[in-house]
Length: 76
Image (tube, rainbow, N blue to C red; front, top):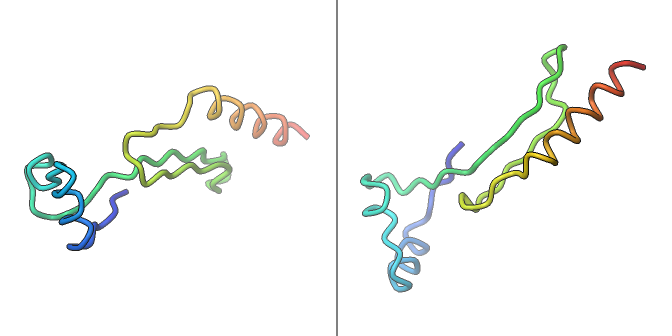
């Protein structure tokens, strides 16, 4: 998943010393948005985590808790 960064925001980042185009090596102005999905055996999304701050990732313990909760609910 990617988020398009508007030109105004790109310029703000540059004023803070962050050059998105230089950092990515592309001029597409896209930022990655880490996304994690837990999909049930029926193909339905049971848990989702999306954070537009690409530096913040989901803690494995949270994903594990979501998976354990799904398994408990599925067992009922």
